[in-house]
Image (cartoon, rainbow, N blue to C red; front, side, top):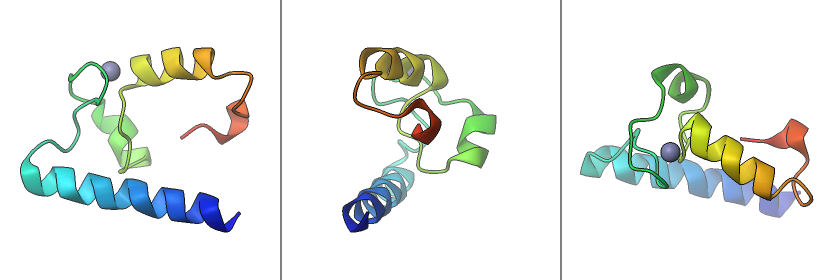
Length: 69
Ligand SMILES: [Zn+2]
């Protein structure tokens, strides 16, 4: 549980760094802009919905679908 919180804080720190470097809002996987509605819901999002969905599909056995970020 504690580790999970730290992971989330790490995501926010990465988002802040990206914001400073002008890369905020770009998908880490395909490099395209992440949907603004998605960023509003999840400011620390690192992937667009498309890539996230693909990743979730691949990781379905390990990740609880209800806890997707
Ligand atoms: Zn993407």
